Structures are given as structure tokens and as C-alpha cells.
Length: 421
Image 1 (tube, rainbow, N blue to C red):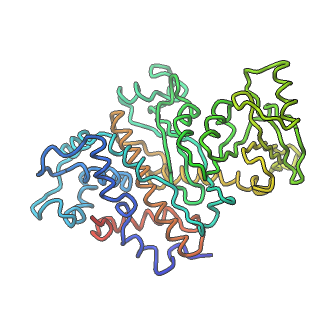
Image 2: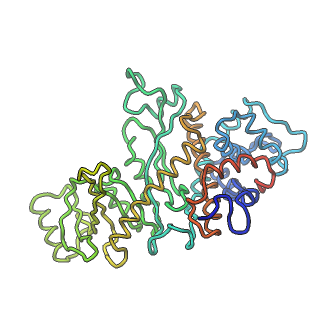
Image 3: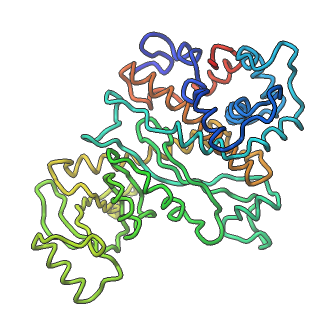
């Protein structure tokens, strides 16, 4: 087992000193995002130009417990080394930083995330691929935001209205992400409310399916399955491995030697004799209208219960990989367990970066969105760093502790070498 602090060619601290945030979120990408969002600086002598504020927002995620002025003070040496201002520069007051955040808005952070966020695992990264497909997972989480009138109106409260008795203490923001299982980097994200029309995880996930890549194998839990979303995701060209609910009808068309079986998903709007006709056509190997039915392969297995009373859970997976030889059932069942790496990535975001039980600091919806993109970008940079270091060392990225990496980066954040211009 590799030492968590040692990588090929030196210690993890050496890698950190060569560049953390700016190494994976480079300045030219920041400038492009700022320009695309129309948020360029209005004056050339401003203390807090947009590109500096982008890195500042990312630093807020790195130092979630510190106030604005403390975060700015930690970065002073670095920003001076960039040549952003001369030695007479002083840390702005919190009011000035607040105004600079508001001028920046969330749009540049969203543009920047869309530009830089991508899978980072390489062919030699342990656990990154199943055959030619990169293992990816989709899931959601919620984040508490300050209880302001604006946040409550924009995001709502889980399970209750703003005026309902016994409602939760804070509005919640729902975030659905597609992440790389091996590295935990978030490659795409959508965020929205937890209450109101279109507030569910499925609704947010629909914004992401059309952006899947053809070399991905997207893993999803049963909450995400329905006919329309399955078709949309499959039409992206990506392969799918989704768990389905136990009551879904999956006719056995052909039993396969690996224990899986061929089946067909039928548009739920088609019933009766028309449905039976589609089943018969599928059994006969006839071509199906994809608006009406889709051929799939099913893998079923039982997870023994821990109580030993014989009531184990049956897992039913459907996949677009219909050729058994391309991915045998045992490998697909093992790949599905990698979905839990997404949970690990969520814990890194919400616990190791933000801190357990901590709410976001932003009091308006746009600043909440900006802050969350800052977290996603910072988590991306740290996870990409870990993946690169682990791959060079011939170890899995999960062998390098995220929490320890965060501590190292925090200690060295004021080092000018950590933020190359």
C-alpha cells in the first residue's frame, strides 16, 4: 500500500507546491470565462479585478471557516507575486470584497466550471475503466443556505413551505452531479431548488444527460430510472448501467451463460396487445422502433443481509451493453459498486471542505450559486491533483487521503509558488 504522503518523484507536498488551484484552473481559462460572461473589469486599477475574485471565491471554499478579510490576507503574498498590484496594496475591507463578489456574479464561475471540469483519470489510473468505458456516476445532494427571504424564495425548504410550522431551519439547494468514480472529480453539475415544480433530482439530471460522452459508462441508482430519461441518456451515445426498482417488468428474452439475460424496455404508454406485439418482436430479434422499445441486458444478484435472517436485497441492473462478451455480468455488478465513490466525493465536498454541519455563507441566490461553483472548482482541482499523484505512484486515488491533502494545501496557500500566474 502506497504511503498517503508519498508519490512518484517526491512527496505530495512537493506536488502541492507546484500548483494547486491555478494548475487545474488556469488563468487563461478564467479570463475566457470572465469574457464569455461579460464580466470584464470596468477599470484597470481596481483592487479586486474579476480574475482575482474567481480565485478568491475558490479560496473561500478552501477556508470555509475564515471571514473575507482573513481569506484575502492568506492570499496577499500570492496575489502580489502575480503582479496584480504593487507593494502598497492592502487587504480590502469585507464590504469591498462583498461588492466585488456581487460584480462578478455567478455566471463566470459557471462558465469556468463548464470549461475546465472533465474526467482526469488516465489509462493507468486504478479502477477508472471497464473495458473501453470510463466509469462515471450520477447522484445528488443538498446544501443548507442562510435563511434569508431571497434564498427561501429561490430554493425553498425540504418537505415544507416557508411558512409551514416545523419547517427546517435553512433553505436547501439541490445539486446533481456527474462525477468520475476513480478520481471523484465532478465533470458536470446542475443546481436548483428543493421545493416546487421541477425541483427533484430527476429534473436536474435531465439537464446533464445530453452532455454525456460516448466513452462513458454512466452508473445510476434506481431513483433516476424512467423510460424517457433512459432514452435521453442512451441517445447521448454513452453506455448506461442503472439500477431499477423491483416492480419494473423485465421479460426474459434469452438467458445468457454469464447469468444475465436479454430483455426489453417498453414505453409505458404502450399497453395491451400493442405491448405484447413488441415483446414478440423483441423475442424474434426484429428491429424495434426506439420510441417504443429498447433492447437491454439485465443483471440480477442478491446482497445478503447482515442480520442473517435470509432477507437479502435483490439488485436489478439494466444496461445498454447488450453483448455479454463486451462486459460479463460479474464485471458489471462489480462496476455498479463504484457508484459509492460518488458518495465519497460528496462527503469530501460537504465535510472535508465545507465542514460538517456548516451552512453556506451567501445570503442571496446568485451568491449561493457562485459559492457552490467555487466549491466544485476547488474540489475539482484537489481531486485532479490527487489522481495525478496517485497514478504516477501506481496507486489508486482512494489511497491518497483527501482530508490530508486539504490540510496541506491550506498550510501552503500563502506560498506564491502554489499559485502560478
